[in-house]
Length: 63
Image (spheres, one colour):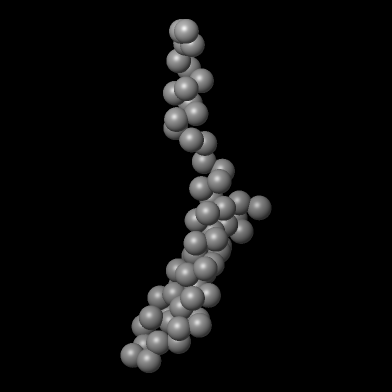
């Protein structure tokens, strides 16, 4: 399942660069590429734990 995220990122980046390469841009293709890129990045970032959660769990609770 995680490979789908990386494929989305690579495919989205490739499509966005391909759409941007020509003098007459295909804006719909550019938008599709950017959406795929962002969706892949979002899905990867959901799996990365927050650094703040780690430090808060290790600190003693003094009240």
